[in-house]
Image 1 (cartoon, rainbow, N blue to C red):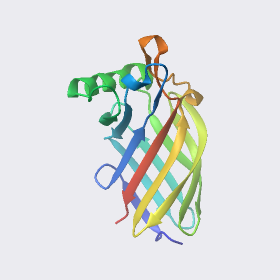
Image 2: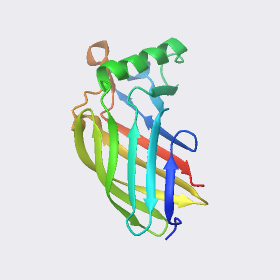
Image 3: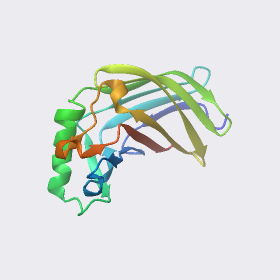
Image 4: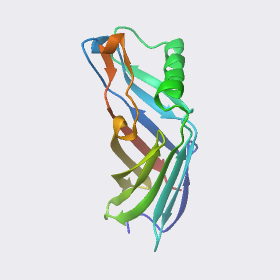
Length: 174
């Protein structure tokens, strides 16, 4: 197995979890592609005879790290407004959890499948995690509307956040 057997506790102290958004619509040039850090979360990765992964993320702990593109740079007020919109209109402060149903060794990492609960709905997802020198890196694309989440739009729909968002994790096992 590429990853040594054991229990790994992950969170903001030894790992990063973030969401990457894109934009579309007639006014897409006015908006920003966002990188949003999840600043309060924890996960437990068990590697052994019965491998598993569980994750809990605080839906109110998403903070905009950066906005790429757009007509002008995002200021602190803009970032705070985006956070409020995520809390109130997008995630509505509903829990975000992941519980694996299978964790398979691929030789260079793991293939993880399980149920992601978000927006009050649970759906199956699968993703690959690669391992190199004790660092795990993985990502998956999530279609917000599959979880009943309406992607953000402004300017009467002329500026939209894409339905697909990318969730990225990087963790140093130690």
